[in-house]
Amino acid sequence: MGACNDAVPDDGGGHLDGNQSVGEPFTEAYFRGAAAILATKPSPAEAHVSCELLLRHYGLTGTIRVLSSEVECTAEVTLLSGDRLILKTSARPEGRDSFRFQVAALAGLEGASGFAAPHLVRTGAGTLMFEEEEICGYLQTQLSGVPLHQATATPDVLCRVGQALGRLSLALEPLKLPAMHRPVLWHVACWPKLMELEEHLPSGPVAESVRSAMSIFIELIKPRLREVAWQVTHNDPSPFNTFLTDNGIAFIDFGDGCWGPRIQDLAIAAGHVVTDPSLALGGAENLIAGYASVLPLSALEEKLLVGLITARQSALILINYWRAKLFPAEAAYIKKNVARAERGLSILSRLDVGEAEMAVRRAVP
Image (cartoon, rainbow, N blue to C red; front, top):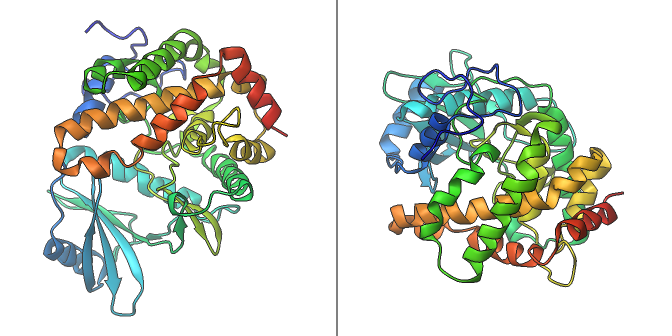
């Protein structure tokens, strides 16, 4: 593979130095480091280890139930009081950077309004996370509610999701967090390189749609990204990470969060709700309208949005077919969003660039 045209200074391990311009977000080492993280299977969490960590760092006891996760180890903790918490741990070196980012993001969102997010539980020493020689982790509250993928996604629900996402973007905007430039394969800068993985796609319409969407992204979208606003983003507001709660719309799992184009979060969320072929944007219109009512889109963002949506759908398809081949026993969990992405991509692929831009303009307030 040749060197990336957007090469910037790094520390030799794929970690960017934080001084790059927003239009030059990563190096070849960044992409390779990010891919290596998702190509490594997480060590399974052990309940007794989690119990020991919980007692040692938080002075708490409870029952542990290990949950599915792709990178870090996640466990549900039920305290004797009946309260439920989430304990995340990692014994991998890159887990420390990821957790430092995640806890700083959650701490930075405390007190924000218009959406909900988990609250951090400080350690007995008052720190946001614990770090031992071989393992690190943090504890957070568990939100009670219905994940969006299990809810009836009415136009009103999608509008409220969009509004909450806009408020999340506003709350994240001023934050400058540790490890926000760490390697993340889901980062928009990695998407063109993901075509290396197309051999893992099934032949036929899906592969053709992915190739077309990535071609449009590389030619028309990527060169303009340096012109839009960049900030810390959630980077995965999927229906599995978006909840309907008594306190409003909530977002969980900031593990893929990073420094990126602000509009990327809208593109990701909208891409997951493209389901109705009778509508130009497949039903994402209401989510986009809700977001834009809180955080108006620039003319350039309106122009780029659908290309970003289809490229992110394509990235999801590529990464998850690849990872499902690497870890066949976990394929069902890994590919939980793939069918939705394939359907959405097939719907949006009908639009040419001009039609896509006009559909977004019709959707926004």
